[in-house]
Length: 372
Image (tube, rainbow, N blue to C red):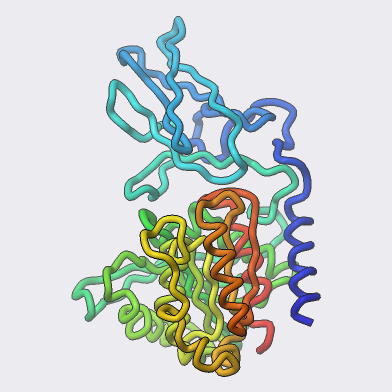
């Protein structure tokens, strides 16, 4: 039954993102991530991008996107212009380099990524609209919660996605996903870059996911993050929202660094979380200097596979197909399966980027809390 369900989910993802890697448009269009009123950058039908920078006094200007720098040429109006190579569909940070200084593009909206406020461009994927808002899906809301941390001795902020039906069902209680961002990003990432609220609105409206809360917390808190989450964030959420406050109705998932936290905090506390999602984590290899040691990292699986599986309703791992972590992740999944772990694994087109992570939460949300 699990195998059939996984096949159906894979088909659902393919259906949601049908088509070839080209834009659905007939001509260049202004990027959806441009600042209000800004025409450039524009995405061409082949997914190359044309940039314009109005800097007539500058001596040199370039665009740094996806680890490649493209020099720009100044035209007769003092505007610097270049067209970069076709980009993979998805969300990409970029910077301008003006006379040797790296700056954000004033023509772009700014997002917290790469450890700073950065420019970004969202490259459309043909036939892929599961994260694009529509007119028909009832809209949930994202609430900003500020609370005091006794662990850190200062206030913290997290964001909470609340489904559209929440206010209309005052007696209903809801399961919760605690969804973590990656390194160099913050608690805004899963909404601003990941479009999680739009994804959930559409899935719930289509009957593909259970109505649920999603809590997005700041995770770069040193070694105390697990304490903060379990001792402070979760109790705060359970006290302020109508949750089902048990492990079967609670999940932890995250991308990259957040995926590692889902392992080190979520997987290690089955009394708190019975559902785990690990997206593109480097803990299996690809970015770390030490090999993944299953005996050291997951002795509870080796000691009692049946008990390990019984504690989990869902153990989900994913990675981008061109992510340097992919082979290491696949090898780790296979090693855990050989020892008896029940794992759902998915690979999506793309590298260490938001498009595979959007697809990961889109699939994870359809699988989680189904056994309750």
